[in-house]
Every structure is written in structure tokens, then in C-alpha cells.
Amino acid sequence: MFEQVFKNIDDVLWKEAGCTTELDYTEQTSWLLFLKYLDDLEQEKAMEAELKGKTYEYIIDEAHRWSTWAAPKTPQGEFDHNRAMTGDDLIAYVNGELFTYLHGFKQRASGPDTIEYKIGEIFGEIKNKFTSGYSLRDALEYIDQLRFRSQKEKHELSHLYEAKIKNMGNAGRNGGEYYTPRPLIRAMIQVVKPRIGERIYDGACGSAGFLCEAYDYLRHGAGKKKLTTSQLKTLQTKTFYGKEKKSLAYVIAIMNMILHGIEAPNIIHTNTLAENLSDIQEKDRFEVILANPPFGGKERKEVQQNFPIKTGETAFLFLQHFIKHLKAGGRAAIVIKNTFLSNSDNAAKALRQELLESCKLHTILDCPGGTFLGAGVKTVVLFFEKGAPTRNIWYYQLDPGRSLGKTNPLNDDDLKEFVELQAGFADSEKSWMVNIQDIDQESFDLSVKNPNKAEDAPLRDPEVIINEIETLDAESVEILEGIRGML
Image 1 (cartoon, one colour):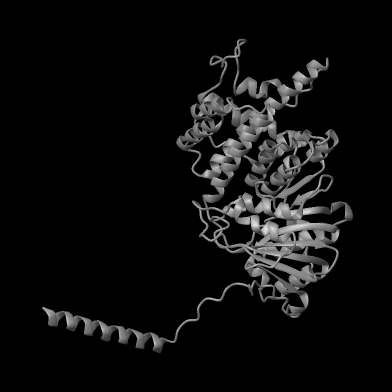
Image 2 (cartoon, rainbow, N blue to C red; image 1 turned 30 degrees about the horizontal axis):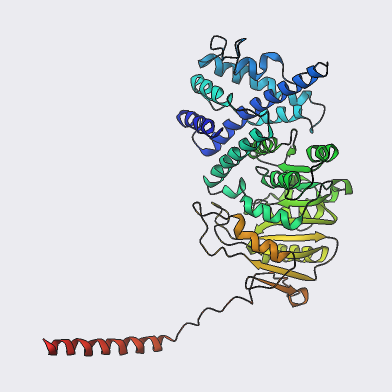
């Protein structure tokens, strides 16, 4: 229904001089979508209030509402071209008035968990990159064709938006920063099995893929009974928590969660690693943690001081953060570079020891190269529970039987066997169990060595190969001589 609208918006952005990359396209689509969504939400709430004989207090002043400046209508509901700003007037209004007004909500909001605060935060971080008011006018008219009223409409919009995030992730080397393959996320959630009433956290939430998929799992999971009003409210307000450092990813995360059905997402724009681990209290802990923290980054010395195990590797600091933030009995699934399993530096060894002693690391999923498009590294997923030491680790070596890439990405079927076997920690050609006693107690090396994989045929001795070539050559000469004799 809305796919053509998204294509039309992309065409407008492609011609716009201020937008040059997929990241720009997604950013600009995001703020326009957000304001249209907000207007639809307010109109809906105003109608509900009117039916109950009450008056709805609008968040946005009338002068700055979508229906006033972006898409004014005639009394007949037609687009009113006479009242619609365009050209330089439109750019001057958006840059000079609208963004300033919206950014001001941050100071006026009653707290960071309100929609008002999110509005202020988003429009303090994002910039309008349209330089032509005529291009912006075209984009506004396309966006106005979108509707957020029904669940079906929101569902379709969420799929189209996810596709934009995926394209953005594929566009550069840092693709994994914005996009974790959804089949991998779904498999991680199926193993961890979050329940309504548990708080779910991602301290490096990127585009909020883990939180959105966890919401879909709890809201629409197979075989689930219809949720009660109380359960739905719990999902809306007290279940999903995220933190994100980068401005663009933060804005996209907010919009992605809104499109999936969370009206005021609990996403905080902050550097997660700036928090001192010694300050964490029980109220700060979570039952479930799902994350794909950035790896390969280098953190400054002052940030490292917040952690008992000092290291510049961003992913190692995040892993300490997640272990500390997990409640006793809590479950986590964390994506990390596979070199974590065997790195010989002191920080890596100390962190593996900490993980094995303070948590039950029960599963390691070894992912093939190409799982993360654009990231260029091999990864594993660590599944662990807090509060008891590790006794046995079940390994699974994922092998889809093909090379993964842009045109051949990971799919749900690729992970079906993993999820099924993991439920019983079953042995197979791709899976095996290792007792903690069999792991080196000095290096704590956890690297993947599949004992069940069929051995490749051993390489033959070079001398044997040379002799075989000589024999074949001699036979060829003999055959050729025989043919000549018959001529």
C-alpha cells in the first residue's frame, strides 16, 4: 500500500543536493515520518476525547502542527495549495522556527520518559538537509499520504522502514552498527525466551532491532493468548529500555520503535560506557539483555577507569557493562567478535574468567563470515545466565551451506536447527558440549574447535603427486605414439 510512496520520497531525496548517502535518506525520512506520526496520534486522541465529552490537550501548538504547515487542507479535505508554504519560505520556516520550537520541548518536558522529551531530543540532534523548498514540499505531500491509524498500516510502515535501515546498513563498512540481521535476532530471542513483566535492555541499541523484535515476540508470539490491557500497558511503558550514543542511530531507534507500536520509547541518548560500574544498584539491573555492541572501537583512558578490567576495546567494556547490569538469574545473548574467545592479552583472559565464574555461559553460537554485511569480521553469540558459574558450554557451528552476502543473506531457516538443538543441548555434526574442566584454566581459551566435523582428506605427499604426473605423462606419450603409427 505504501511502498510506492517510500520510493517517491527516495526519488525526491536523490535529486536533493543536501542528501548524498543512504544515511541522509533515512535521517530525513525519519523526521518527516515522526512529525506525520505525531499529528495522526494527536488527531486520534482528540477524536477519542471528543467522543467521551472531554477536551484533548495538544502537545504541538496549532501553528506548528503538521496539518497547519506541512499539509493544510480545504474544508472539503483537499490539499490547500494556497495556504501551503513552499520554496525559500518553507526552508526558512523549518530551519528558523519549526526545529527551534520542537527542540525547546526538551527543556519544557516533565521527564526523559515522556513523548515531549523525545521530541526535544530528536530535533536537537537532527538537522534539516533539504536545501530546496520545492523538493521539501514534494516530500511533505508524499509523506502526507501515509497513515498510522490502524495496526495494519503501522505494520506495513515498520517493514518499509526496516528495509531502509537495512539498506543504510549495507551502504558502508560500518553496516553492523545500524543493522543486525533480523533472523539472528529472532533466534537469539527464541533461546532467551523473554516474558511479559521482565525488563529487556540493550545498552548499544543502534536502530533498536533487538527491542523491536522482542516486542513483536511478546506481542504477537505464536500460540500466545490475547494480551490483557494491563499486559499491553506493561509492554508499552515498563519493558523495553535502550541507550545509544550516536545521534542518527538514536533518532532511527525512536522512530523504529514507534512504528512497531511503542508510543514513547524508553531510549536514552547517552554514552553508555561513561557510566561507572561501581555506581550500579539493584534498581538499575534487568532480567533480559540482548545486544550487538560495537567492536573495534577504542575508548579513552578516562572511560576505561569506569571498569574493573581496563581495556580500550569497546566490545570488552560493553560485555563488562552487560554482566554488571544483569539481575541474578537474568539471561543475556550478546554478539561479539570471535577473537574474544581466544585473544591472549590480559584483559581478554580476565574478562573470559569473569564471565565463566560469575555467569553460566551455556551456549556459544559460531556465525559464519558474511553474517554481518559490511562489517567484515566473524562473530559469535554468547548466551549466559547470571548468578552461577559455568559447568558446561554447548557450541553450535552455523553453516548455511552457502556463502552469505547482500544477495544471499542469512534467513530464519538457516537458524532453525540451532534453535531446535539448543533446547536440548543436543550433539550433532555442527554441535557439541565442552566441560569447563577441559578448558585451559590459565588462558580460559574458548575458541571453537568442532570435534564432530568430518575430517578433510589429508593432503598427499608432493613426491607421490609428481610421480603420478610423470606416469600419466608417460602414458600420454605412449598413446600419442600409437596414434601416429596408425596414420
